Image (cartoon, rainbow, N blue to C red; front, side, top):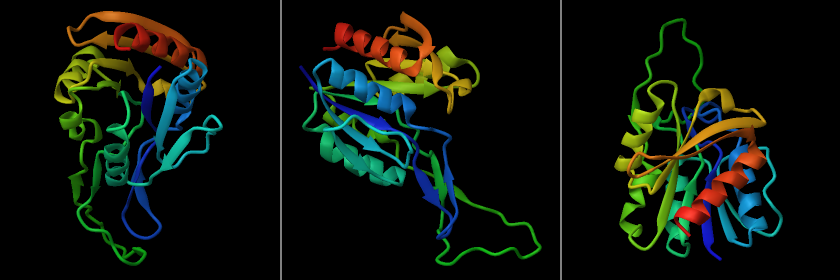
Length: 207
């Protein structure tokens, strides 16, 4: 069996001590994937942003807040794993500067300068030759084309594509593509069943 790293949930990028940017990720799919992997006999390490879901008992869970923290934790864990399932939704942007005190209303417009956060999956590419990576792509338009661009840019072996209607929902529908752009499988069900189906594809194609 394999030792699998799973990223799950959102990250937060603080604007000041009390406000932050984030993504609307519940962590339900990450938790379902961890449960499916444990049930299949795999060892699991989860790097999780702030979520309210529960992960399977007995697995290693590394809590993080920011995208940089998620990257740092993944860098530390990935070298000891056989593969990565990147189900998290890291925040892609962060403020150029974080205010040290709470920002108060001034009666005038407030312009916020944002810069990109590090790309967690792409940043692990140098560790990839002996390992596999499965990415997730939540897209609102041109799903297949954008997912294939992401797969190539991030050096993924498979990409799981879904839409925004799955956010905070107990159900989801996904399509799984390989590096050649072939549709391997499509599933629509509750997230636990879909996670089990995704894991079966990963076992068949990569493990």
